[in-house]
Length: 85
Image 1 (cartoon, one colour):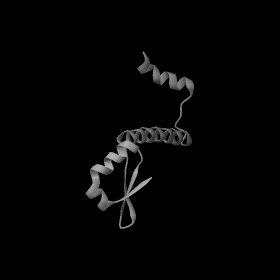
Image 2 (spheres, helix red, strand yellow):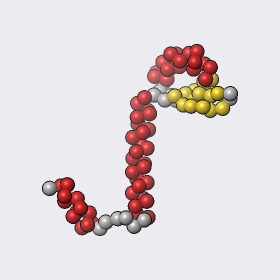
Image 3 (cartoon, one colour):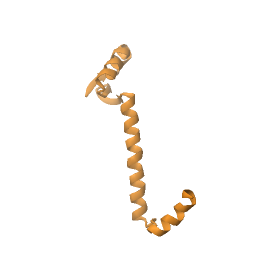
Image 4 (tube, one colour):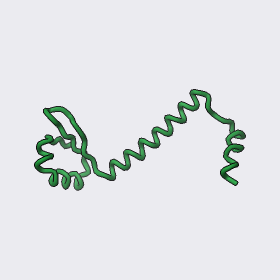
């Protein structure tokens, strides 16, 4: 992963963004020697967001199972029949 100082980002934003577009490698921006932000390619960001939504859906399902908020196959078919007919 590439690391850039925030001052370099201010001075060389166009070059840093061009490098990012070409390499698709995230850039860690640091301030005062500490991580401050990441720059990522737009497509990579969208991919990560879709993956996060999927993982959140799985987590909601796991919570529902643990809390007993589930339906039998018959109950589920009855509830879904409203939308499937």
